[in-house]
Image 1: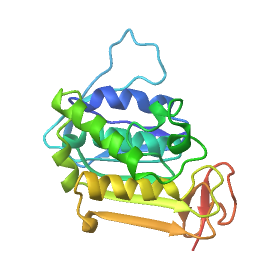
Image 2: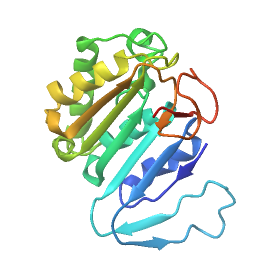
Image 3: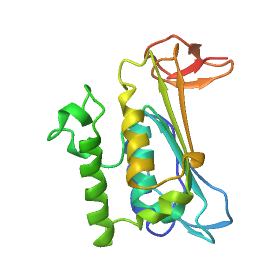
Length: 211
């Protein structure tokens, strides 16, 4: 697991969760930041340093559980996220409801507009209650969705659900989303030359050469 953390304002709460992700998570900030040291009394190896940022220029991406977290952060703290990438991840709030909705938020995930409608309504309720940022912020974000057709853990329906949710319910322009699928790729982040053979279904370090 790799976690690179930088956070400020409301995003500091979400960034703390990155330390427990089960896959690679990357958060970057493309603006000038002034770090505030973590408290001296902190003994945790995963201490998160808070940054004061001049403008909302975060990007976040991840694989598997890290991808689900990337979407969670991008929606919850949408005012501070400019772009994100999801490699085999679930949509916002989906995994937190997996026990109640195993068909569309569990390992047997299926395409379901009705389920995405319910998630969209839940997000609207949270936004009205000021528990998450205004959903209109999503329309300016740049989004990247990736699924490998040989992935045994993340079925293609994940991206179908995401495309419906973002474009039909939250009105994100299609020009802001890239939906990418590789037929011969497994559960991994694809590269040009580094990592496992592209057809590897799921094996550490979950990076595959798919030139």
